[in-house]
Structures are given as C-alpha cells and as structure tokens.
Length: 180
Image (cartoon, rainbow, N blue to C red; front, side):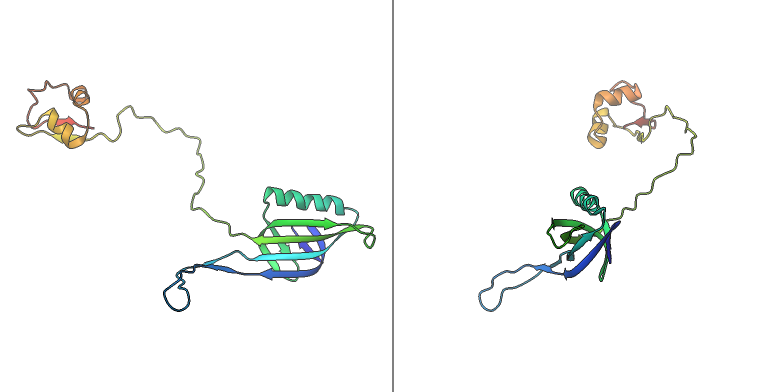
C-alpha cells in the first residue's frame, strides 16, 4: 500500500529517473566540448489501482492537486518529498469493479526559502517627526555660490534659495547651507 498526499494507492510498478542537461559545442577535431552540466529534477512514474468506495472522489482530489500544483509527499517503495503531479490518467474495466487503474507521473520540486521574517506589531505608534530626514548641509567658504552648490549636489538653484533664504550675492561665509 502506497500513499500520495492523503490518498492510499495500490501501486504495482514504480519507475524513477534522474537526468542532466549538458551543453555541447562542436570543435574542429575530436568530440564536442562541454562546459556546463545542469541537473534536472527527479521524476517518478507510478502505475497501479485506486480502490475502495471513494475511488472517484480520490481521483478527483488527485486531479485537483495536479491542476493547482499542490506539493505532496509520496510514500511507497520509494519516498519522495515535495513532488507535484505532472500527469494523471485513469481507466476502468471489468476486472476492477470497485476501482480504477491509474498512471501518475511525479516531479520532485525544490522549495526556495527566504530570509524574510515577519515583524510583530507591538501596537505602539512611533512618533512622527516633522523634521526633514536625510538633510545634507554644506559649510560655506569664500566664493561659494548657489551655482557651485547646484553643480556639486544636484539640487536646483530655486530649491537652494528656498532652503536657505540668502540672496544670491550675499551668502555669508562660515554658515551651514542646506543643500539637500
């Protein structure tokens, strides 16, 4: 007796396969050159019988899992975790009055994990500051102009005038000008 997800199956034959893709580049003489080998996911083929009073609903459940890409675990002669159903076929005949012959193809999946962690909300609100964040200042020296600040920091001359309020030709020496 085998199990795929929550469904019990009578599996008569299990086949498993593992394969890789390898690049191949022709060369002037000799065999082609290979520079990359890529592993393909393992696949399993099962054939057997779905028996019992609930075989029709079990078959529909397996079809739904296949269509939704539900990740299951298969336990039989082989054990395969994190598999999806790629192909599902069934047939009924006079030899099995209370069941269905089935054939299933499974592929093992690798589930990616993320370092993201959900932060718990303490329920307390943090105070909001009205001060601009990330402001950048420049201490003026003799000869500094809004034009120089625009060239150096990329903030428009109109915005520099708005931030600081000094006339263009009368910027004091040694004051902190906001430039961003």
